[in-house]
Length: 353
Ligand code: ADP
Ligand code: MG
Image (cartoon, rainbow, N blue to C red; front, side):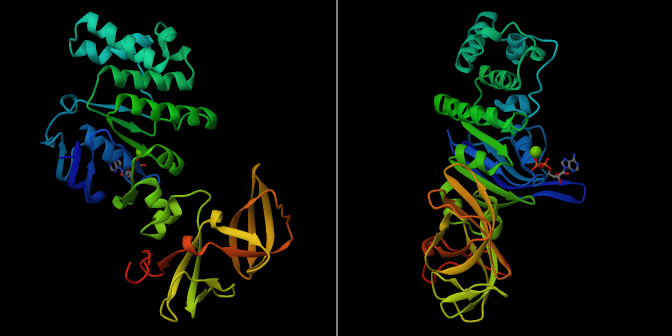
């Protein structure tokens, strides 16, 4: 039995279908990340788990119990929002203890739980401050503290880091990961940021227009995406995708270079050829191309190249630097090539695999 189970869950607003046939298992202690573009239904799904939105069809079970009609406050799940939603007129300690007070928890226990959460989050010295006297990262910590004091059976996070600057986002990301390791609670985390998904998740759920596109570990999705959508959503910089036609042991795009195939396919078949920027090498032989742009990132150069009408993005090691206008040769790591059907955009696996 999984901790949170969704079975054929639908969500409609009037005639508009927002979530379609969502079935998903979230195991006890697992860190599950729901990722997908803005508007694909992530927040709606999280709110349905929390009980803040009802569901139009299907079943949600928490700890084996159907909760379709159970109010949010009985589900024992804590949610942390992007907006933090702190009470501005309450000090940090009061913000953190408010839910416990409502639940008539004894005063001594409230004090002890707030102290415990504050020490986990490094908030001990801030308990007497108002939210306006805190930085963004500190406010986010208070919002997490408010969730922790309730000792819920699961944590739900809705884009909790999107209001922070890039540096703080990275720091808070690792704090959330440490917190999860320490508390060991089932966590469902929503983000549109694939790097957050890759770094935090035990299990990533990719949503696309209200449907589950693929579920897997970060590496499964990176190495074995089932579709063009997942291949281009996961991985940074984005995978190169080139429409091409099979001819012998290569695929040839319109006015483009011959791209080596990792396995045989019927002659004439139109495919989408996928290769990540990390898996193209600049060397002495292979595909002739011209460098059109170089973006140094320190150890690496991110290089845009053109071969005929085909543009490719390549991550090259800065030890062998290239410059705009250089004529170079490219080879691809054949083991890493991903091929997709050009019509339905699903991945083509090697026959017998
Ligand atoms: P995400 O969090 O992935 O950005 P949301 O779950 O917020 O997406 O929204 C999914 C879709 O549902 C969007 O197209 C949004 O416009 C629509 N939606 C959300 N809430 C309502 C509502 N109360 N009534 C009608 N449509 C809604
Ligand atoms: Mg959202």
